[in-house]
Amino acid sequence: MNELVGFVNANNVRQKVLSLLSSKGEMEGERIAKTLRVVYPTVAKTLEELEEKELIAKKEEMYSLTETGVKVEKMIQQI
Image 1 (cartoon, helix red, strand yellow):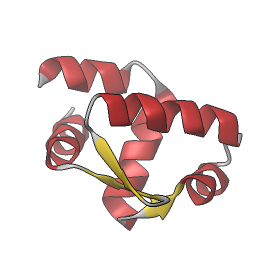
Image 2 (image 1 turned 30 degrees about the vertical axis):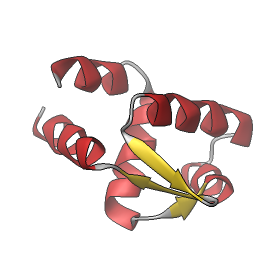
Image 3 (image 1 turned 135 degrees about the vertical axis):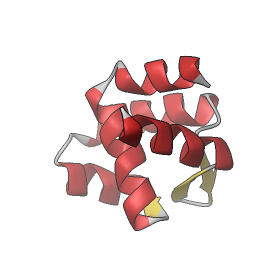
Image 4 (image 1 turned 90 degrees about the horizontal axis):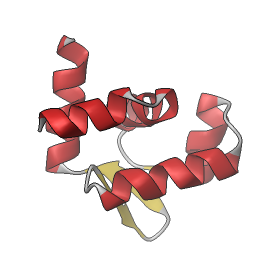
């Protein structure tokens, strides 16, 4: 689990995406990009990375935190 916390903390956009999904629930990739004011290609790559690590899940066009993602986000909040 600490490895995942380090993975997220190593990149500011990863941190912001996890935090946003934690507070807002499900969101589309383009909406995430607009909300964070980050260009979409950067957000798309970040979403792909987070999905590979099973921190988020994509259902149709919506992204949300997985159970692991919720745990990692809570650990990051405590740092």
